[in-house]
Amino acid sequence: MIKKIIDVTTKLDNFVLKNRMISATLIAMKQTLPLLAVCVYARLISQLILSPNALFVTLFDWRLRIPAIFQLQEMLSLLEVFVLMILSATFTKHYLSVRKVTQTTLPTLTNFLGTYFLFLGKGQTPTYDTSQYLLVILLSFISCESFYFYQKFVSGDNPQPFAVRFLIWAALILLIDVALHFAIQRSVVRSALNTLLSNNFFTTFIGLVIISVVAPLLWWLGIGLPRELINNPSTINAVIKNLDTILTNTNATLPYPTNLYSVYTAFSLFGGVGSTLAISFILLFSIRKKQQHLGMLSLLPSLFNSNQLLYFGLPIFLRPLMLVPMILTSLLGTLIGYTAIVTHLIKPATLSTPNTTPSTLVSFLGSNDSWSLLIVVIIFALSVVIYRPFIAIETSEVSYEK
Image (cartoon, rainbow, N blue to C red; front, side, top):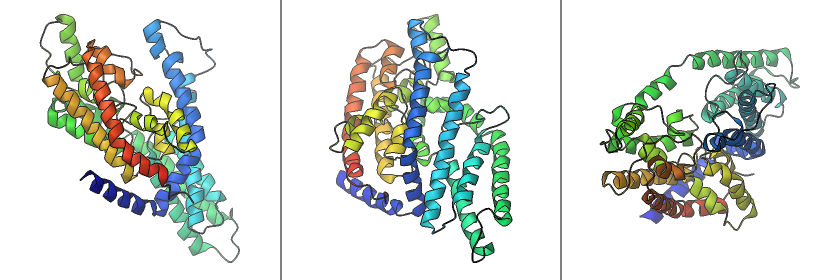
């Protein structure tokens, strides 16, 4: 049965990789990886040491004084947008090359600037989540296709890349990006999702199972997730009520022993969405030097719940080969964590931990129950077993590279 699932997934993955849009996207992601690594490590240093609520600041009351001239969070946000701008430009170049378009300078520059206008407002900081990879790729794809057909329709025998007719096309694309910026900025989807996650339904077994499937699926699709699904969901009502109950009476019965924090965050986010810390661990022992380097590069961020380097480096985006183990490991963590809590094998995490606390330690630090560490080790070991055959196939076949 397991072999059949792997075989079917591999065939589907190979089919998807033949799509020129997917192929161009994965090449662009791998080429953007060095810049993304700078961004990820800069953000990690900020979260651990530099920001006012950094992990080391919270735990040891130790911080570095940053001159006021350096607006750290704004600079990091701009760097994240710059990564998306490079991703869009690189995708444009590769995709149009596949479409046999020789004049790629203008559309590449247009999509580069269009991504800037899409994410940055008057304050020069992103107005919404910058992990919207699907949005960036789709807009770049539509732009490329429109340029391809527009050029065929209006160009003569010797088209000039910056002729007025092409500049008009570029202006229209940029106007669309600006319009989308204001439309998305006013979107109520994110607030609606935040409200939905506070519903008591997500303290039930079915609700937690749904989250364990939907969260890796959305991340795999390149859709930015609510903060509650990638970090410490300390603002969720169930978590707050549990904490209030403990602070009032340490022996009181918790109203919501199973919730997004005590189950999903504590047992299904090892290394980020899909428990991808197991991937970094497996890559460290790969026979390929390139994969070993990716494992070493991604290991430290993965320990602190960031899997963007794996997302770009393998890549994970829209790969059926990666989706199956992501969902399986996410479900595994939820099922084992939920069972351990409802059978009173371990205490649920109720105490708040800093947002950058490694997910492997959340259950222990949030409950002060050493038995939870054993559950973490078991889940991580099983996650490695699940991921290993899929990563073995990925590291031996890179058919999207030309």
